[in-house]
Amino acid sequence: MQRDKLYNCPVDAALSVFGGKYKAIILHHLIEKTLRFGELRRLIPQASHKVLIQHLRELERDGIIHREVYPVVPMKTEYSLTEFGKTLTPILAAICEWGRTYMGDFIRQ
Image 1 (tube, rainbow, N blue to C red):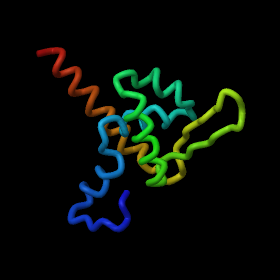
Image 2 (spheres, rainbow, N blue to C red; image 1 turned 45 degrees about the horizontal axis):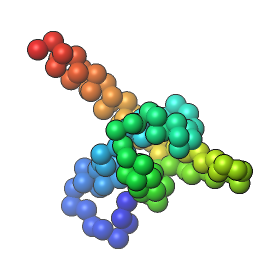
Image 3 (cartoon, one colour; image 1 turned 60 degrees about the vertical axis):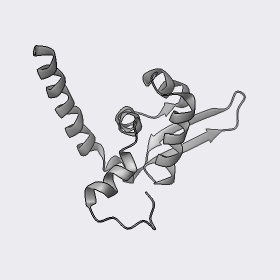
Image 4 (cartoon, one colour; image 1 turned 120 degrees about the vertical axis):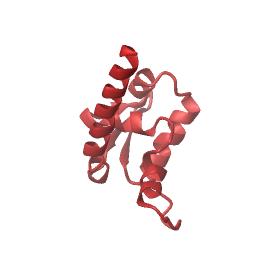
């Protein structure tokens, strides 16, 4: 989150953190376990390499995820939620449940 930016609405502040095209999807996958970059790529194939890296960097900058780099060849990088990032879990669960309902309604039409 841009800490120096003034927000007039708390929804704007929240969406500035996890409102990117794939950020909520990344966070959804990280709720259950730590994942390597390649695993995230497979789980989110529609995200380009560049955009996925950009979103991961922004989430790390905002203190939502932790990036751990292991000095091995080939380089191993893992991502996990920080304690602060874990506070998004109930929000993401509600979004997920709403999405299931929406998908079910859409399929029935």
